[in-house]
Length: 74
Image (cartoon, rainbow, N blue to C red; front, side, top):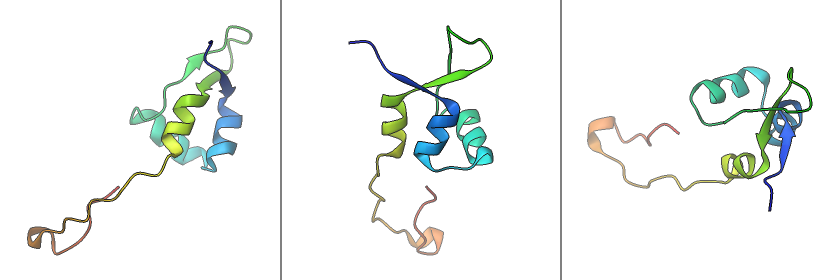
């Protein structure tokens, strides 16, 4: 089954993130962009990657006295 893609504009809308947040996630490698064979100017995002990015992850409950009892940054 071929992987399905959406445009970056649609992916940002689905994820509900701002443009600066999106760019930051791309730079950190959290989001992989693909070239669009129909339009070289636009980029695509795999729907599976977008869904994976938006899946909630558990926060570790372990707190250390070394960090002042704060939870680790996400």
